Length: 116
Image (spheres, one colour):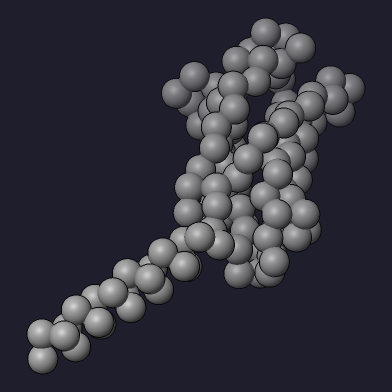
């Protein structure tokens, strides 16, 4: 009985580790500002096999502690990575933004971005 319990524990641990091995947080976030359209474009490396099952869950943009945008997603627009553009009216040059991306399975990434 003890051997079966040890075997089940080992199999459970291997299963959990194998699931998380395929999950990963977003990487290398980049942002660009289009002043004439007042649009911030956020991209991130987040390659996945199935963009409907493994995707960027949320994008949050903060100005200091003030949340400007919080957008949630139910899939990723590409298996190669994440990209979205957001209109941010009234941003002044020098505004320091915090951009946060959260993976639906595991992890998150943050970027500090200054409006040029």
